[in-house]
Image 1 (cartoon, helix red, strand yellow):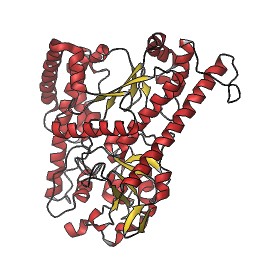
Image 2: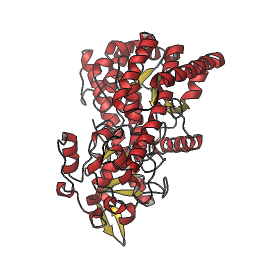
Image 3: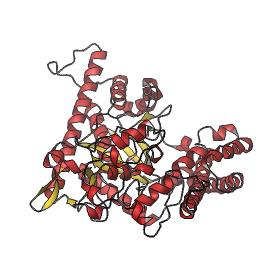
Length: 494
């Protein structure tokens, strides 16, 4: 079995060709795009479910030339990214000021010396235009119309105070199954996401000098258990990134549990925890033992019969949570099989147990994965229901909410890295062949012969980023990233 699944040493440094792969009946467009796509691009998949995991070739990094950024190369990469982001902020601000000037009957353009608007309503209109540009936007603009922006921003602008903008995320690196990321450190994807927040802050500050007060709620451990040592290390590195790019004065990182506990007070938090325990007990009874994903809809139907509709209205379903978490929990290791190859086999059809050709090892691993995801789903849903029961959302102070998972009415949909909008902590940071900073699943990058690039910024246990093999060079006795790639690195514009 191990010999059949092990990667070819010869294949590790050559480009991917569709002929390398076994045929598949009824291949999806995503599968065809991935297996036939050029090795300078990424898959743009939003979920591991969208990838043909059973077809992907995994390779051992020990078989590849190590690539490392020295201090000068790292400085070049970071300065290039910052310069591009600064230029984008300036363009966004100029566009917004020109728009505001034109809408009030003034003359806009470089020859007319456009100035930031003075009227509070005009300021909000300009800031709304910045927030809803394609560089930041995720989802529909209709979720955050100008009237909503006025209601949320105008009090800040009238008081000449920084506008509080809140986002929830950056929990921890999702590396448990080895297919999304190689380790627990935040990598270039998270650094790029923070740079995008700085881009937004700087564009707003150029139009409205009080600027933004960015509040980032780290939600690791809030809805399902996670080790504190790992989360502390992750958050410490995030703050270091914020310092590197000049965001540290504008952003405040908070643990979501502590933040909500402070909002609710001691009694309110105790009540929330009491609700969480009760909901967990109820969901555990209604859910029963782990079963295939399709059966999870039955759990939702039973919840509808037991709980008020208003409580369930803005809470994700058991089925949806489970369908996501099954691709995030650890995959039990199998001796003698390369871990990522084994994880691909297990997660290709994570809830398929009954096929006679399945080995007992695959069946057992899939049952364990589903059981772990099932329990995490119970915990996640219980926490979400507890928040709804005590009205956590209504306790937040005035703010503008950036919706980074899915756009919804009243929130400004926000994309950190554009493209597929894969969240940075769900994947691995990379530069594609054009120098665009993206987040992509590690297993897809591996299949496309991207090489890991290490740096002292996070050490030798995990790559800081990955780059296409074709954008590396072998010079002076070592393999290096093509200098041109480093000097053209940039965030996507949409």
